Image (cartoon, rainbow, N blue to C red; front, side, top):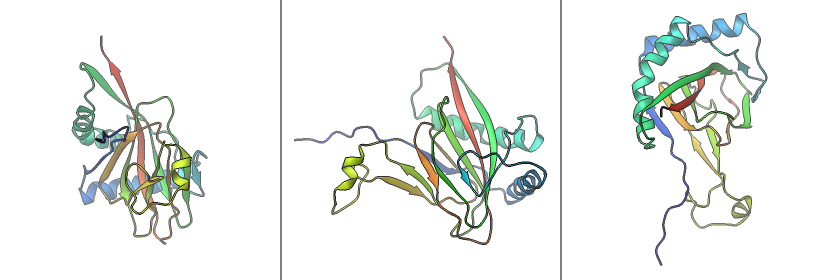
Length: 195
């Protein structure tokens, strides 16, 4: 009897903007936003979540111009029928200082979610994807964990990484155990097919 892979989500993980100077610009911008603004309470536990950023802010526009080709590469792997337009929606900054985390959540009413890592200290907290499979599978003991039987999948972020994933997939961020802040820029991606 053969085994055919079933539903397994795909995720893009790659270094799209390794420029140290640009990441420093983003870090400075994030701290300025944190100092001057209120924090939204969405999934963040003790962490900072900025207001949604205007795409007209020069550093935000520079970022999205730089990642556009990488996003298109990932979306091409999904085999979406062309023509279509890609829209970056509701970008925001996250700053998780020591002890801060993000509870399990998803991003409703959008196609893809994405996060770019500006600063990632050791012990800063992994990104955890929760399996959409039945919880009864996870009550069993296994000799080896695989895509078919694990309840979650962890990604250790690195500076310059952009991770794109299905927006309806539950995900969380582990608590930052470092004395350094963990900083990311998150956003949604909408796709509009043209008839």
